[in-house]
Amino acid sequence: MTKSKIWLLALLLVPLDAAHSQCAPGVPSAGNPGCIPPNQPNSPYYRDDASGPVVQQPQPRWESRWGAIAVDLKLAKGGTAVDQDSESAASRGSLDRCASNGGTSCEVIQVFKNQCAAVVQPTGGGPLSTATAATAEEAVSRALNRCGEGDRCLMIFKECSLPARID
Image (cartoon, rainbow, N blue to C red; front, side):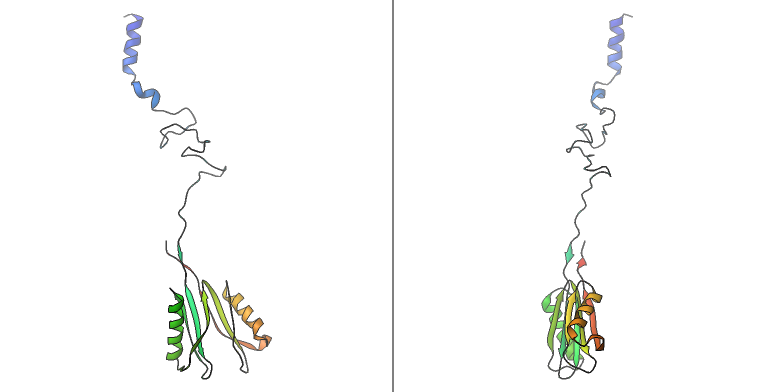
């Protein structure tokens, strides 16, 4: 067999697309049909830092939650609503709860969205102090500061209506 026949036979045994089926050493080929080196921004394996591949995570979606506090100051009755979908639902819920607790002249004194609220009053009676904040503890602290009687104020209500993750 001549040398040219051996070369021809060798070429026929090697698939013609073999040269195109693999990327260069160090360049991943799976999902990378262009064999783009991983350090290039258009590579599916590109990392913008040394910690690992960039993974696009979908951002969570949040829905606001509302709360409200209603009181009847003449009869010392009150009602609250938290985790409502709207301001009007929270206000309506607090007024309904105040009425079901015996209030006849209920008024909304505090509405809050995606946060916490607190109501305090001096121990001997007097005006209510309300406050809102990111945490219930901070709302209580702010309401106590507004109360003016220091440690002689009683906490009447503290609650949070924080946003709800929907996905």
